[in-house]
Amino acid sequence: VDRARRDELVEKLSRLGAGELGDFIAFVPLSAATGEGVDALVAEVSARLEPGPHYYPEGMVSDQPESFLAAELLREQLIADARDELPHSIAVVVDDVEERVTKSGDAMLAFRAIVRVERDSQKGIVIGHRGERLRSAGTATRRQLEALLGVRVHLDVVVRVDRDWQRR
Image 1: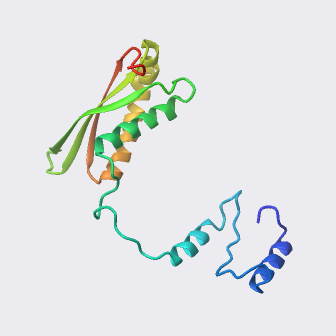
Image 2 (image 1 turned 120 degrees about the vertical axis):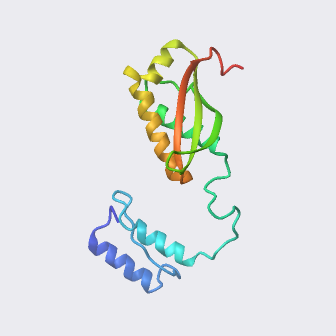
């Protein structure tokens, strides 16, 4: 619909409705530029899908362990925040996950993550001025994990220089 004039669009839809261009169940005008019509398209497709089998238990959000999710989310945040400054040669490993109970009795997961970089200069980039970049990435990751897992999350992050870790 982005390129068509309104009268052209009406004419095309009427031809589709008359079956001139094929036998269709529904017609959904869609704008690639603005996204207008996407919700209608999703609703049309969803209404026609048959329920399928449950491959995972109810409430399971991923087939990956929480430690893997935490590591990948933190790595994604760091790379997105540092953009061109930080090469993609960082690795994040969660080496400890502990279930805890807060003072108020709520469940909490505590993650200990290690960010591995290859050079001292990269360590400074990851940490940022006065730790701001690492704090920001950690906070964003913690919020994402809390939303995904449905529990409070504590995230302890350490940055280590591990020369040539990629080659090993």
